[in-house]
Amino acid sequence: MICALACTKTSNYNAPAKQNPGNGYTEYLIPKNQHDARGSNLAFIKKKQMRFEALFDSSCIYSTLDAANQKDINKLYGFSDCGTHHHQNSARVGWVWNGSAIELHAYCYAAGVRSSKLMGTIRPGEPAVITISVQPQHYVFEWNGNKTLMERHCGGDQIDGYQLYPYFGGDELAPHDIRVLVKNLE
Image (cartoon, rainbow, N blue to C red; front, side, top):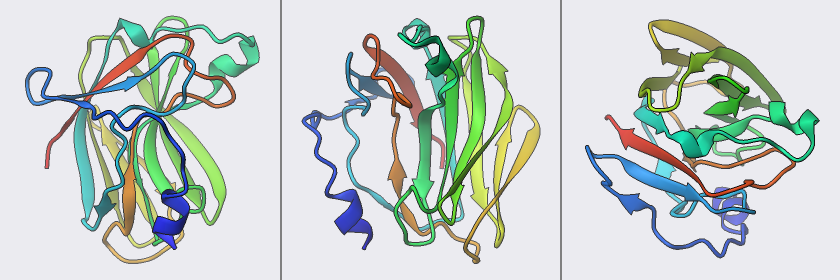
């Protein structure tokens, strides 16, 4: 079921992400007028947590065409869960440029219901080390010494899904090329 849903995505951005642009990071490029990052390949995940470091550069400063869309949460990194499509069950970090800083959000779907919580803000160029782990009924987001708990629909202590990569939007497409660096830390 996962592959049938995940593999139906049509993308002409099969070019690989830029591996190791420095210090072990992978650079994900979201081209202007697109949602998806290049190098977003299907990868299944079976582990207890995802730990990574993210680095946003000045390309992550943007203005939307419709001012109401400025608060739409972009997606950074995470996973689908419970053996389902990510719009059913998933956990990932979201981000928004709020005009003065980048907001980081815990962003989840549990049984098809979307929810998010603000975790805090960073400035472009500041690295963020983030862990998303699973408990039987919760996702635990850890960043900057704080924990954010979000509802999880399935039980168990292991992720059962596929990798989710950087994505711009909401409603609007990337207004210009956007680059995000991610380093896996597990």
